[in-house]
Length: 343
Image (cartoon, rainbow, N blue to C red; front, side, top):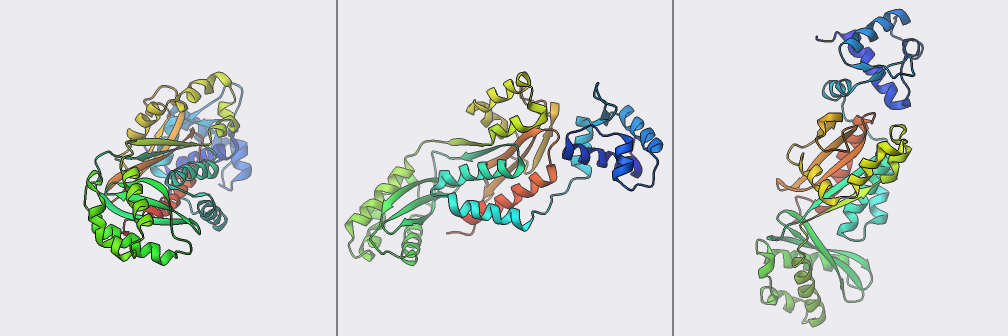
């Protein structure tokens, strides 16, 4: 049966009110809080129809109704649009990245933490790394007057980082120039083949600064030899305990066990890796332990190749629109940090 506009509106109100309050919604509540021009009796009849159609459920201890998984699926497919983050939310995320990122792993860890903080649910970030990689570019991020983070980026995204010593007083402009020279020389080469001879003329431009040159070559070898293919970063595991749905210890036990298994988390995140934004609700999740949950998942890419996946896991009663908007904004930060236009 196709829902008419009145049923759609009432269903949307029930879903959004339940997302906000976690309390079953009754016809009198709808009539009181929303100016629909309908009597409680009319609203009650429409709710009965929605229940018969499978969109609403009645908890045993309440006269109100709550949305079913079917209702959330209809809501996500037909009603939800990415929300607009407030200026305060954007400023919080901007400051978070500025103040906490000190290395590449820190970028992913910070992304997981701010994602959970903004959505009030568990977050997961899967960072992809591969053994056979081609050099794309290198970047220096200054730490202090004498140290910088050397970031090696491959054709499939961020790979690794290493702290190196730099001459006292070396300016960011000089680091950027050096990074560009190295990048132009090594771009397209297999990381395993990189050696000092490839950068011999760069050594000359460094005014024969043997120590800096050796540090750069050693750092390139170090980050290139990293054989970790992937890593999962988690944020907000404790957030689950603040959700009414998970205050029952028995119910949350299986979910917490899954969050401790990195291999299972990788499998979960891989399941939606090629689909852009993907939302799975309730039993649509095929992994035991998360079938009472919803998951919003987004894959990010550089040059069309998968670099990693962000996901938010929580109760089906989650703010889908806000979660999508937060992910979109975090994706902007990741693209700025690892940007596709960098050479």
